Length: 331
Ligand code: ASN
Ligand code: ZN
Picture 1 (cartoon, rainbow, N blue to C red):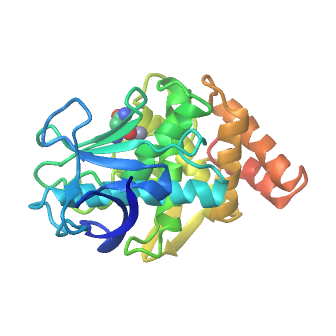
Picture 2: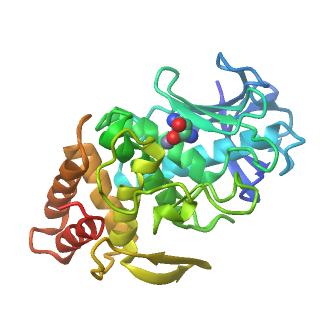
C-alpha cells in the first residue's frame, strides 16, 4: 500500500513546487498517485532501461541546482503533472491515451545530451542534462512538448516526416505554449517561445518563435510554400505561426513582458480569437479530424470543421481560422 503524499521540491525552473509523491514503508518516491501513478526515475547517465525510481527519506526533493541529481527529477515530475492537469481540466482528457493511466519520466539520460524525447515503446519521456551553455532539458515547455507527442501518437498519429511531421511538431509546440500559460500560477510565465529557459544558443534566445518562426535564424517557413524534405522542427513553423495568428492576431504585441511581431503572407491583418479558443479548436481538430497523413491543406479543413462544431459555421471563431490560415498562405 502506498499512501498519497504531497512532497515539496526545489526545482531548477519553477522555484519551490509541490510534488505528487507516495510513501511505501519508510521511503517516499516520485510516484504521483493522483495523476495515474506517474513515476519519475533516474537513468544516472545510462541510455536504456527504466532507470531507478527516485526515492527519498524526508519527501523534500532537490535543491534547485544541477549538483543534486534529484533536481532534474523535480522539474520533470512537475512538468508532467502540469501537463496532465492541463489536458484534464481544459480538454477533459485524463492521461495521454485518455484512459487515466500515466506515462513515466526518465532524467539524466546519457552524458551531455542536449535534447529530450518521447518514446511510444516505453510510453515515456526522457531528458538530457544539456552541455556547456545548454541547461537540463527539463523546463515546463519541453516536458509539455514531449508529453504532447504521446497525445498526437495516441490520436491523429501524424507521421513524423513531411507535412504531417511538421503538424506533429507544431502540435507539441502549441500545447507546450498552452501548458506554460495554463501553469502561470507557478514562477513560469506563459509565452509563445519554445525552450527559452534551456538557453541552447548561449545568448538567452529560444529554440523556436511562434509569432515569426524565421526569427530563429534557420526556419524558412513563416508561411506555406511547400515543405519538401525539411526537418519537421522547421516545417512546423507554418502551423505554429497559424496558431499564434489565430490566438493573438497579426502585428506587434507584448504579452507577459515578451515582444511579438507577427506578419502575414499577404500583408492582411488578422484578428486573434484568444488562445483558449484556439487551443480548443486545435485539440478537437487533432483528436477528431486529423489522421496520420494529414497535410497542411487537410489541417486547414480539420480546424475549420472543429471550429464549426464548437462555435458554428458563421462564427467569428470559424472566420478567424480561415483568416489565420490565409495569413500563412494555406488556402
Ligand atoms: N526534442 C525533439 C522533439 O521532441 C526530439 C526529436 O527530434 N524527436 O522534437
Ligand atoms: Zn518534438
